[in-house]
Image (tube, rainbow, N blue to C red; front, side, top):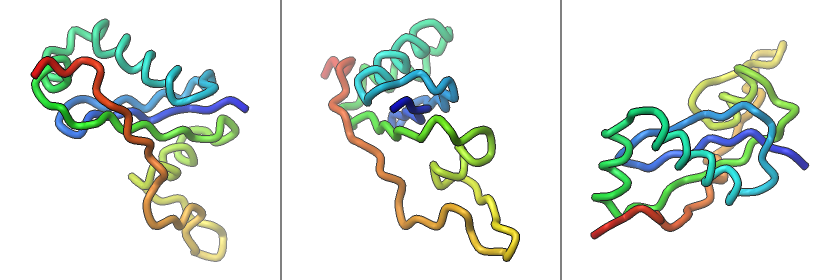
Length: 104
């Protein structure tokens, strides 16, 4: 199964990657680190190096697109025709991953 991913360091940058190209958390984490490095993003790099917080990874089913994929993260709502929340979840199932860039 393929997934999109939302990956975020709690004190740094997060990326919503709607490529549908990830098989697992490790692939999403690798792409996140590549984006932080390539994005001329000193804020994101500094947060990774200075803070030991785990990086959070959420795998999102690839069949979800646009607002549906965002709603899966819990950041926005998508409503059913009857007015109910299409993705009513208590807390998205983010996976905490040790921060490989922390320098202490």
